Image (cartoon, rainbow, N blue to C red):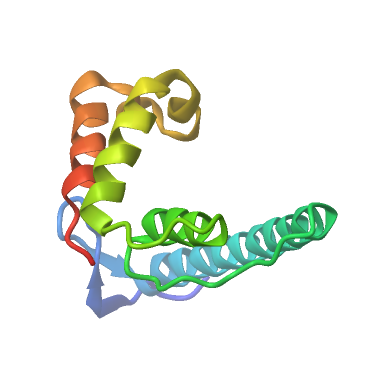
Amino acid sequence: MGPQTRSRSVTDTVGEVPLTAEQEEHNIQVALAQTAKDATDRKVARATLKRRARLHNLKIKETGGDGHCLQYSVQDQLAQQGIVGQTMQVLRTAMTAFIGDKAEYFQQFLTAEEHESKAWKGLLADIRHSVGN
């Protein structure tokens, strides 16, 4: 094993201790492996979604990556039903009430920390008051 050299630009996030080149390389390899796994997971999820959409004669539409995909999706579905002109604020209020009433169902998609009452209320407040259209 060669000498352990210090990286000048990479530091440990815990105590600002510089990482060795070997530690830095290891962290890079771990990150690359996780990225590859995430990419594979996304590819499988997208293929599954496409199959489900075809099964139900639906089309997948891309939405902006601005954090408002739920609202855009609801707006799109309402428009397909002939319900147009709903503002984002009206949708947000209605969605917040709906999600809040069905907390048991929606909480299955959250982490344990997000299940906590304060975090759950914060999430609902974020949905209700997010900046957007």
